[in-house]
Length: 226
Image 1 (tube, one colour):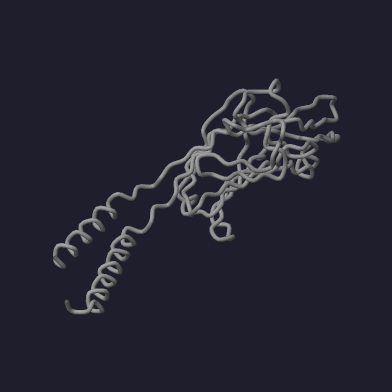
Image 2 (cartoon, rainbow, N blue to C red):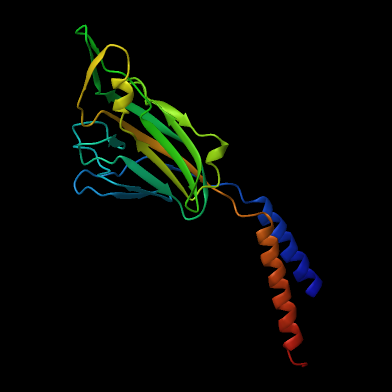
């Protein structure tokens, strides 16, 4: 009987070790609300925590199921942190550019509204920064998927933020007269944040099963003879 028990436990441990794929989850913001507006939102095992309102301005201002981000001047978040019950791999998210509002005036009377690196994605593991990505959100009405590389694996939190422009850089460009104030200077929407929990170590079920065998043997030794 003991041999059969040990074989059964060992088989179960081996099977469990093979059956621990990463669990993928997607935050679609499908139940995000405008009223009441919250700075936190939970969906599919993912917790989002923002430093501003996670709902849209109103249901008429844009499609449902997205989060709008401004770099300043509004109640919308400038950064959102995502986490799960245990460490995870950050896979991708949808970037939906809304526009750049920075206006640079030149001495010849012309002007431009330049793009710049306004999107920031950072990965943290136990409070330490381990992954960093900065890029321009891009052209208006041109949504695309941002795929994150292997540096965004085994994270405890993922931060998506929107950054203000470096006004000093634009003022230093040739023939620039001035840079007009803007608040916000850029904004974008995000959606479909895909994370995958890091699977448990394959040896963990085997170790747990081994402890179960030891506990079983200990109970047999303590059992009085019939």
